Image (cartoon, rainbow, N blue to C red; front, side, top):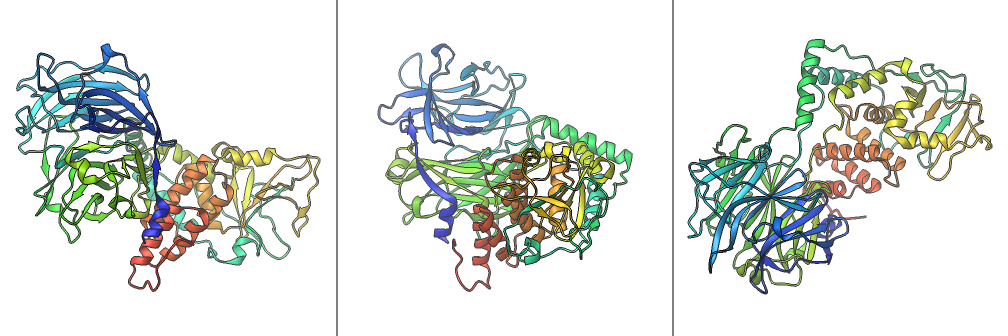
Length: 633
């Protein structure tokens, strides 16, 4: 299994202005850039407030120069969180401006990654007072920074929490926490993504009923030769007969008839529909506040684990104990200086794992729906080198681990040293972990797309399937959602004659990977032949119109659609097709079983979906019926 995992894991050496090794610096990700803020230099023991940015696509570091008057005080063991395009830091330990020694801070500073300038926050004037702290935890939810625990100058744990309103730029209050927590053995994390809701309940039920009725059309297996136009490579044929009307039944050959299928118009209840749309629209525009997860592990010899949930701090502060959910046969070891990330329904924790027999960097995932743990398997690369910082990049959907592959983890841990010379990039898709892809358009727009597809009067073309059925579509809608659709139409050269025709005499144009054979200039394209089953083509059209797949799509049509998308977008230049493929991969991964794994594995291999391929292979290898190990082909 290790060689297979190497397909989704790689190590890169960073270049550019690499940050020097430091102690107590923070790591955050904004977009596709990773930021290292402040820290104490290992070589000189000098505290800094420097900022370095790593481009996660080129792996080139850049030192960001900031003017001194607006720069916050140098510090280490502070906290840093992302709010929009800004990084919010709080507290930490700094040098005493009035004399020798160190002091502890309780200030807020905000770094705008767009302008690359600092803004210093107001002083905390609260009752009870906000005590300075370092090695604390913090998260941002509902537009508020929540500071948890930490230690004071005397290294005593502070059992309180504070809330800073980032919208109003003011402190709201200090609240009792009732427990100890700090960066050495705890983490706090919340989701950074907005929540988008799909169809309102009434519409969703009706659309599912319509789609289930539509799925009754016979579906050819993925491996069926008839579905692939004989032994030739799957292609598309354009029928340019000017006499054909969009909803008219036509012949593809002299012996086979094709039927036209048009989705029925949903009969939505207006009151429920309007209410559902209004609620979902509001949720999509404003985004939903997310709870904060507080995870702690104590006593690394006989590990004790605790999980608390802090509801979104819209009105005060609450702490709910959910530690009873942390049970089961598979549990993570004690991790030192753990960090956390939310990816979909999973809480990802990572940190240093040190025992007499093992010294490595461990990554674990807790499924918050099933309360089950799984270890994120990595190759042997973490058994050597010093890896000490892990963070998830939402924009690239990759887990990033920073370190130095030629240093000693034990030595660096003893000095609390973090390195930034090398980066390990992990794809979590092989473990069934991903951020669910929500719709990019509103529920109202989705329903409008469905109504447009259901109305034959708005269609001027038809797609002919391998089952000899037709699906009426609008070339305008198809072209706007998928520009490549019209690009191939506009590529028509009227000086080139048609070289293909159907048995019934209708001239056609064949779209292949390298060329397009076209019809006369005075003929208007009317039909597009897609050599895939009806269920596959209908699902693609449904996505182009509504930005959503049918609620019920069996595995074989889903796999066939993934292959069709791969054929249509080999250069990966059509965002809507890439998005459709992403939604498909997530659905196949969600429903993956030992029975469906072989089909999904083969489909993923052909379509270049490495993460899904490794996931299916892992399921096959873990199945009791697995006779031989599965590896890359």
